[in-house]
Amino acid sequence: MSLHDDMVAIGQRALAASRELVSLKSRRKNAILLAMADELEERREAIQAANAIDIEEGRNAGLSDAMLDRLLLTDARMDGVIKGIQAVASLKDPIGTKISRWIRPNGLEIIKQRVPIGVIGIIYESRPNVTADSAVLCFKTSNAVILRGGKEAVHSNAALADALTEGGRKKGLPEHAIQLIRTTDREAVRELVQLDGTVDLVIPRGGEALIRAVTEMSHVPVIKHYKGVCNLYIDAEADLDMAAGIAVNAKCQRPGVCNAIETLLVHEAVAPEFLPQVAGLLEEQGVELRGDAACRAIVPGMKEATEADWYEEYLELILAVRVVGSVEEAVGHINTYGSRHSDAIVTESESAQQAFLREVDSSTVYVNASTRFTDGGEFGMGAEIGISTDKLHARGPMGLEELTTYKYLVYGKGQIRS
Image (cartoon, rainbow, N blue to C red; front, side):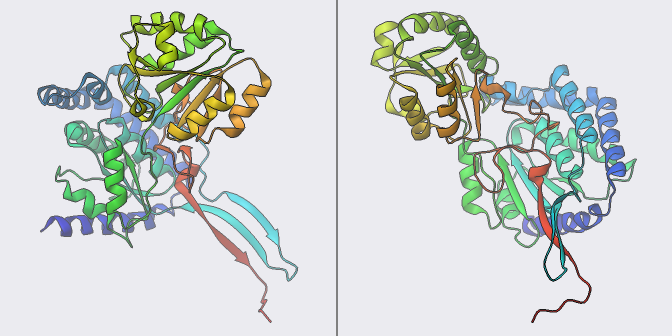
């Protein structure tokens, strides 16, 4: 059988599974999810052994430390995956929820109700935890899912998918509700995203090149997250100790992720005091600073920033730094160079806070907090399917509600239209 035929068969099996999933009650779905979590715990050592193979192969292939970190399944991360599944099981099931209801003058009762999207394809790189997050969120919302991870995590993804499906089967998981594409042939991605009529939505998670390629190839709708160029602005009325702590956390806590900051903007009124303070703290963490002329006049050791640096998603310990003259200038920079992901202001000024919240055109905007909180788990979603920088149909961290659509249920008593 050809790759094309294989992919068509996977799509057809997913479509059949999606029609079974709509009949599952919430209690049954939650029991299946808890069984999945139990199976992951039971197979923890085997999963981590598979992950160790991927880490070794990645190291031999020359993957960067940041990429290897994204790939690694530590005990703490395995704990997080398992707890995430348990958290999703505890969340309210959105399927069947009435969004609104009204009665027309002719007596027709109209209900707008949440329903599954159907079949969702998830294409992702590096992080094997995406296998579990995607599978359980799609299942909780009665969507069939087709998973296609990157070749760098092929052993980890297979071990996780096998555990999820085997654990789920013990409590009645429909056959083929969760399918993993196991070939590393890149053509499988093209085949998957062109299964129009079978696959209802594609969500790519990974680098900008992957997402642009998927978008160009796809015949089905795509929710995109091109990159995370996140900005932190330190206002003239900021608490500078707070600002320094937020800056270090947002850049250094885990630099290889999309919600880490890539640019630091500092108001000119506090730059002479703040920049030497924060530069010392960041350099202690191994951060390379690239500044504009105003920054380099205050901290001469900074490298020169170029125009390209303001657009850059480094995903490593590099930070671009710029001095600005106002909140308006900071907002203008963010809306010009940012990626509509996550941006933050540190200030005690209520007017500056409100201007920033109102005018920054990003999915998630913070006041006096690190951008590292843009995450489904941190937002109380249990897990996330991804972070959308699109505006339709989902924006920001995508949890259960973002994996639903709706339909109208109309009840009549013989009405006909005149």
